Image (tube, rainbow, N blue to C red; front, side, top):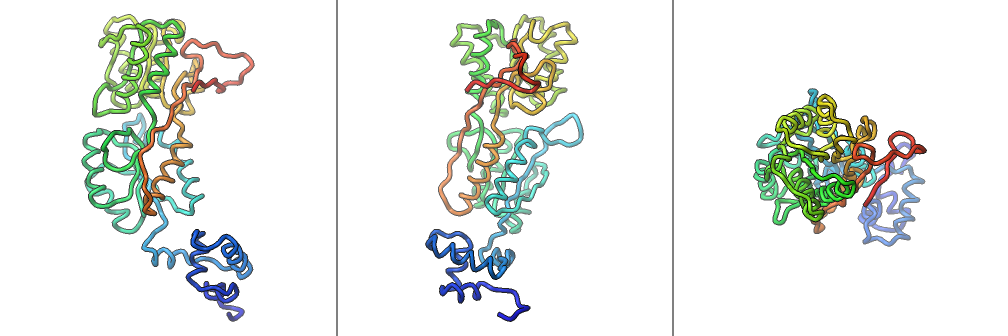
Length: 358
């Protein structure tokens, strides 16, 4: 190696007394190379100030070492069309990619026919993380095509038997059960629900079914008139849904909303109709978005662990890319109790603090 030339893996191999292939494996942290040899090769690489030519390495492996995160449009009150819940997952996904040596390509997509072709097929990314899906049945057909084409992907969403591909999602039915049990324990007798009770929106539907499970266990009635279909997870949709519920003239003393944003809109409608939260109506949301701790009153909700979710999405996709066997996984939710359900706020706690039951 001349003074001005860049060191190569052959230089490291010569110094270490091993083959160039062993050097390549060691720098990829392959278990085929002993830990002692890997350590010695890394030390020599540092001494020579050796840098891996990432482009050449990727080309040899037919890999971009990049994941594509596809965010699909959702109705929002502004023009972003991105559900804020998914934005809370973005930081965790980014950090998880960095820890595993992957770049992350983030793209906003409409759920059109050929969005996948620009990524794995064009070698821009080795696999896809999908956030958001709209109508489940329309989405399922597209996921079936991804499986048929051999595309590596993982998605956040409901977990079903015999579904296409791999999903990571929350146990939405269990979250609904926790809400129903908590409200029943607080003495609430007539619990209403704002959220879609339709197969096309399986996450919202499971939250409602879990609520019904808990109400039956508590010997409380389930009235169809106390459920209003709200499809969009927005404040405006929650406001309109609560207005529709109030217009029915049915009595209720608790309101479970399928998302925090729906709950925020619903609380405004309740206030406009002279209903106090929580004195007249206890209100509970779902997601535990950051804004939930700062509503008035602070919103009781169900935590979906976005940090763990992001880590699971990245880890599962990378293991699939490497040829390992992977499976869908359901993550446990946790009830976060604040003042909107009638729980007394501890005077010693600063704003935003809460208690959690698991």
